[in-house]
Image (tube, rainbow, N blue to C red; front, side):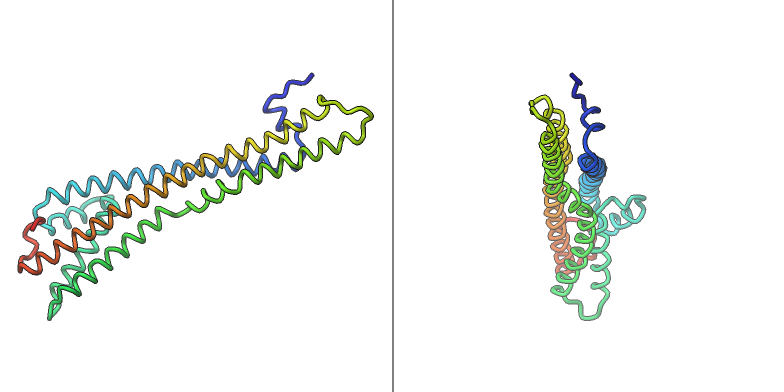
Length: 232
């Protein structure tokens, strides 16, 4: 009796089932590449947000923080880009004749949210691929399983006496395709859900920062101060 190893299951499967296995293997490799890439990107986004907030709380002048942002080689991440856009808009609005605090509030918040949305879109790129792999892979594996089982039972029509030993290898090969589908799908679904939740938390964090910065800008404009201090 031939031992049913993984190598045997793959090499002795029918051509359609092997094609399904190759597709699932490629999907799994691609999804793991995306998973590791997204983990690195989101981890970097969390670290850069924390680092920038430390600078934001410690600097006494917005102009000093702006200079630090411009000097930074990595721009200190998304939150720094949001601050840079907001600071530029604040300075621009203050130089306009007939300075309007409501216009400052609307324009500054809008400019910063444009930057925030652009950065979030970059973080969300390719997440749809993980969702597709997670939802489709089990069905692709099931297709290979159904095809393999059909082939196994069709072959029984050519024998006089059918036994379980005759169909067991073919069924095992077919079921292995389902296992590969699940192996590709489960990590993709988990990573998609975790990445989506992390991006939502970052978006909320960025949005809170925008509200805080707009409030500081309005306070400076109301008190007549020219960004002497980061705190009211």
